[in-house]
Length: 125
Image 1 (cartoon, rainbow, N blue to C red):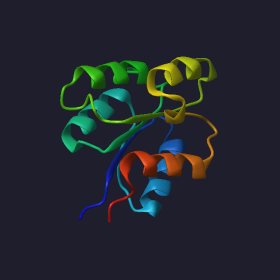
Image 2 (spheres, one colour):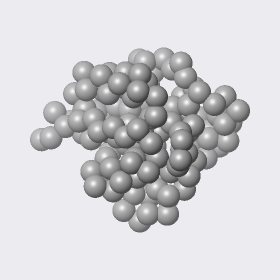
Image 3 (cartoon, rainbow, N blue to C red):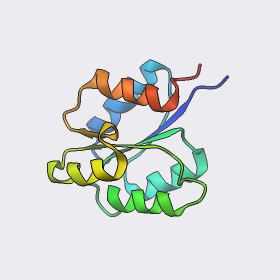
């Protein structure tokens, strides 16, 4: 059995690194992307079990990434958790994805890891 793949799409290197470290320590196979376009490319090539997505990124922002994912038949079913610092975007994202799939930075680490495990079924080692 292989580890469950999680893709982190986050432009802030410190947050991206933190999420990579936390998820790797839990046993997930973690891929990262520093912007939305790279995230879409990695999602298509790696078929992750879950995508952690920032909203505010240069070039292709998180909302556009969500739209592109939903338009792609191979990726439309991929669960997404939004992790954002944009407080005014939270209500709309919660309406779209569900309250349990939107985390405002700074987030509670244990709660985020629990949600990742709930959605993916765990690291799958």
